[in-house]
Each structure stands twice: as C-alpha cells, then as structure tokens.
Image 1 (spheres, rainbow, N blue to C red):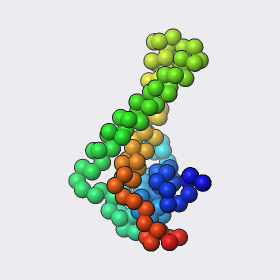
Image 2 (cartoon, helix red, strand yellow; image 1 turned 90 degrees about the vertical axis):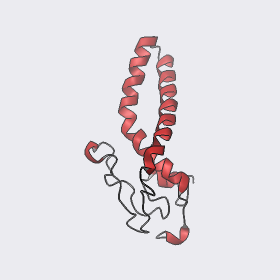
Image 3 (tube, rainbow, N blue to C red; image 1 turned 180 degrees about the vertical axis):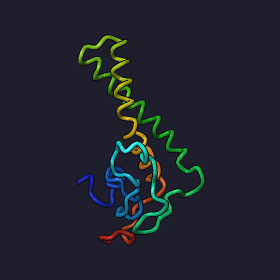
Image 4 (cartoon, one colour; image 1 turned 60 degrees about the horizontal axis):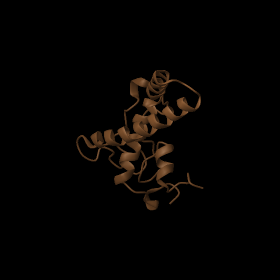
Length: 128
C-alpha cells in the first residue's frame, strides 16, 4: 500500500513527523481552523525532532506551494473547459476553487518541503 508507515506520502497526508511518523506536525488537525492553520509544534512529541531546522526554513515551501497552485490551476481550468464554461467563467471558477483549496495547499507545501530534507528512521518510530 502506498500510504503505509515509512513512506513519504504517509507522513505528508497524515500530518506526521517526517522522521518517526508518530507525532503530529501541525498543532491544529482541522484544515479549516484558520487561526492556527500554519502553526506547527516546535518539536515532535515522540522523537523530539526540531521542525524549524533553521531560521526561516519554511520560506522554501513557497516554491512548493507555487508548483501545487500551478498544477491545481491547470486541473481546475481543464475541468471548467470540460463542463463548458466560457473563458471568463472558467477564470472565475478556477479562482474560487484555488481560494477554497489554499488552506490545503499551504499545509501540504510545508509537509512536502520538510519531507524533502528529513527521512523516515524506523528506529525512532513507535513501531520500530
């Protein structure tokens, strides 16, 4: 299974620490809790990994967010085209969907970015 513990996708989609995949990454598990949407724990509750590896570490996640936005915009534009929207209607449709998906995009971009640098360590896992 692709979402099994130990895979990058497990840590990304389950909001888990990239090293042990046991502790939560974000403080708020609710995707639409706008007050704390990007608040992360300082350290993993299980393996004590420091999430903010260096000052301003997550500025690099902006590039990941940009890439995700481009993919989503193309997908939404194609869906709008397939359902028969004209160009202006399609732009409005795409803009609304991008705005609705922005909380998911922001969180996924941070999780993807940290998973590029930190790898799973089975010895740090609860199961390991």
